[in-house]
Length: 275
DNA sequence: CGGCATGTTGCGCA
DNA sequence: TTGCGCAACATGCC
Image 1 (cartoon, helix red, strand yellow):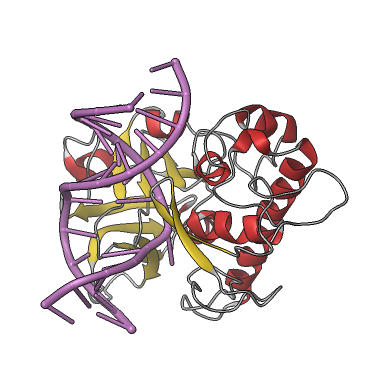
Image 2: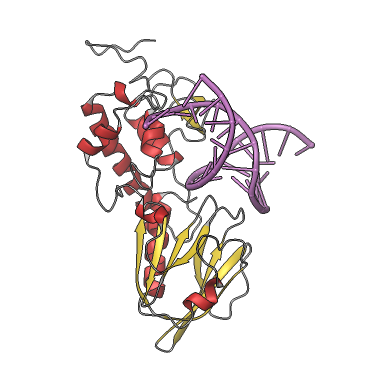
């Protein structure tokens, strides 16, 4: 599930469970632990105390009094908090056992597909450092985005570039572009500044909407109501045309060929859309 | 069985 | 230099 709202949700969960806690045990299956970790999770983390948990885009960072743990959820990664003696989770790849005062807890990292990453480092890793501004934490600077959009690249590829905006994934990009009627394949440079501005707003709105869904949910299995993501061949909720699908920047992109044409078939003046 | 998947990275090529 | 297509990663699910 992990896009920005999911990672933010997990960040808050880790923050509640970890800040001020001491790591008393840590382990991983090794396959998930890549990057600069050489001594394994345990050697690097046990004995450390958690100062803070941060998120930037889809990356999480657990800052300890010594060193840091970076976590990326990939496609199917997730963290849950369990009792210290709880059974191993299905697809559990790593765990952190912590103590805070007299209470104990065990954080389990699950990831069936193993695309996620856990990296221990002393300083910020390049993947974290090179991320662009976070739409939720930093907002979206329309001037900067418009500047990055002076390109022939498809607009969808631009907003999903983690160095342009950190945390926009396929779902948010697909939904936001549909909201503001911009064709995901549109060369970014074809968009007017006002269109970039409305896209920025739509992305923030979608992030907040999805975050609210998570905050309200009783358990981890909520369902986002999405307008067109994953709905190719269904009718467009806005105009009823059949939703199409294209591959943009290597990712499947649902779009409405009739009402989502800004940047590819938008007209000059008069507000008519081509058909 | 085949096809698809919310992400990232690297390579070859135009 | 820029950007694109494609494959790979490892596995579940429909």
